[in-house]
Picture (tube, helix red, strand yellow):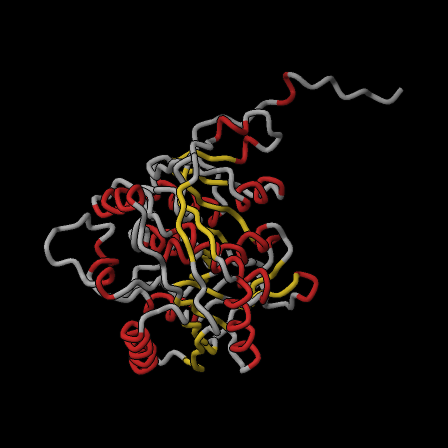
Amino acid sequence: MLPAFQSPFVAAMVIPTGVGASIGGFAGDATPYLNLIASVTDVLITHPNVANAAVFQKLSENTLYVEGYGLDRFVQGHWALRPVRRNRVGVVLDAGIPEDMQILHINTMNAVKSVYGVDMMGYTLTDAPIETGCEITPSGCSSGYLRNPEVLLAACKKLQTEGATAIALCVLLPELAENEETLEANYRDGSGVDPIGGIEGILSHLVVSELGIPCAHAPVFTWDKARPVTDEILDPRAAAEFIAPTFMPCVLTGLSRSPQMTPVENAGPQDLTASQLSAIVVPANALGGIPVLAALAREIPVIAVENNQTVLGVDSTCFENSPNHHLIRRVRSYEEAAGVLQAMRLGLTLGPTPVPNFSQTSPPVPVPS
């Protein structure tokens, strides 16, 4: 229970999608660090890339699961977050998904509803296949494209009209090209960029930007591609995605309590706004994204975690000429980040720096004549 005069200590934990993060760039491998950070905050805001782990998910009660575009708009000060007790989750199934995999995912919806009590309002098939593709940018990041965005949005709007307050996307992803297959092999070994991360972000960003409601994506493959791996031991960080043929459970449980988003001018007294955000935690060389830039513009401290490396290469040296460069606090690990956040939460200023004596440099106070 917070004292009446204190507002909640709110932080955000961001790990960009498809950039090869050594922590959080795989399958739920950032979850232990997420829950550590959550333990020293009153509210922790994060996004699906940090929390999703195929059939697994373990979020603390004070963690808000916010799609990346919505998180961007929140930190920029455009949208407020409205916590909910539950959402009515609708599912869009890509018409391109083979029938056997459609049945598997319908069974998964029913299982999640039965086991976790998630309010599954129903599903709809798109009128035509979505047709996606995966790409790798010159910087080494994962990206992609979809040929029929209007088909996807039409299905999402249909569910929203029927009463869905959150939408899970199940879109068939293509067979990988030869260079992408090499990336996937590296990913399995714990050393590469997730080749499908980029297209997943594009899909959910599109829906949230158009409909303004929570959304996340569960990739679907053909059965031959989705078959669990039983002939090799994988890197533990990637293992969650190769032991079951569906990634849907984590998406449905995350969306079940994902906060609603509303224009900040419509925010109520219980809604969270960027003015309440005390800090953002992010990999140390992934500082070029919207959340970090918006946080610095709003004079919100950025905690840069050095042992979480990505392919981006945008670190604190890129901000040396920024007037808010001093707001970037470099730490070695998420354990150290948790200590910094706890000190901030308690209002402590730590360190041996002596109190300055301004009388040595200040001019004498004039004495009235």
